[in-house]
Image 1 (tube, rainbow, N blue to C red):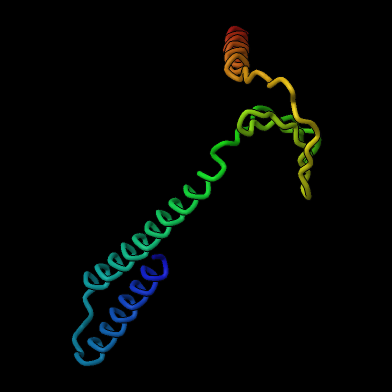
Image 2 (spheres, rainbow, N blue to C red):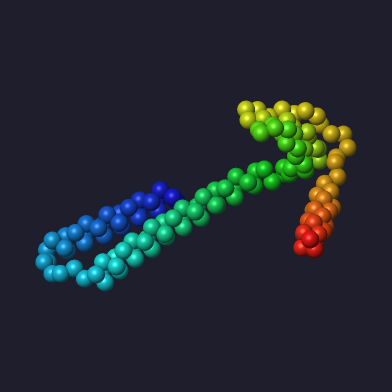
Length: 140
């Protein structure tokens, strides 16, 4: 699909530029600035259209790849350094504790009882702390 779109756009661009070059050589009339601006606008629209098609194709390909990992969910993470962290991953019914570094991923433990994903409570606490801190700052 992408190769077809790329090949078609290259043929259109080549034909358009070659045709305009031959037309410019065959007639010796003055070139209108408005015509040049129009060609520039058409070329810009063509480039943006090709970019948009490429972005749509890439989004579709990434969406298909993400469907493979739809059963995985990160429950929590703890950073241990610049590139090291411990992650709790929900994989189906199991929760795995993984050690992640720049070069490898190791299973540290398989949890017998799953952790509660109480992320909503933490967000509420953060929201309350932030609003209290902003109120104190405004009052000072």
